[in-house]
Length: 354
Image (tube, rainbow, N blue to C red; front, side, top):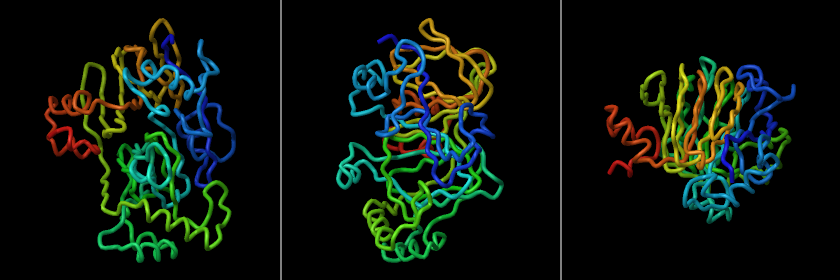
């Protein structure tokens, strides 16, 4: 495989909570003038698998390349049923359903899936009074929770948290949650589309469920719920370099997410795949003799075998990857003077520091 920066197709989701913010606020080109809830920037999910659009590998699916070249695409020695990361822009013009995604154990046990879905939300924009619902209040048993969900009285049983532009929420599998309205986010997560939601309607088109279907969905949700989970928004931890500001937004065993602002060309090295998504003006990525322009709200996949790329000349980006937590997250932040408590708050990385 000749490694180069890969542009991919972008599967779209048109769920009822979406609007036009990805096109109008982020400036993402090529979107229709219809409701768009999600653009799946890098996806190897069944039914939403992206394909390469540039260079010698054009037409190849991400699934095909990952299966054929796991070491070159993901990381040396990596093996798995699919590419491990999924990333999206999500338009929460309306309220997302109250829902959860199973963790690895319960996804394997109850849904016969290879993994669950832990995710993180990086808030790109939120109205001044925007909030999210996040986690189950202490002392709420399943019977009371089900009754509240059937009454659509979510505040009685869930925590409501203020959502601010620039914050990041690390949401483990099994945590009950929702966000919107008036929110625009970038989401990075495990590759999965499993979910259980508590709403009396289908999120694809808003059509009403029968009472029996609704209750069955809530019962399935309760089986996968981890009510002990908590999450607090994080502003991120900043690492300053010459002409580069890096904010480590979140980190855990499944993914890390950083936000970079650079005013001069940047060369950086890596040994596992990187997802790069632009938040600002167009810029160019150069690697292995290939130059690729990245437009507004556009994403690239940088295969592991590239080893090194150059970003020209200035830009603002998000970079997602499966980290070596100790070497790529904990140690640089400790060297910058951050405490174990500050680092641990970024996500699920406590064990790495012990």
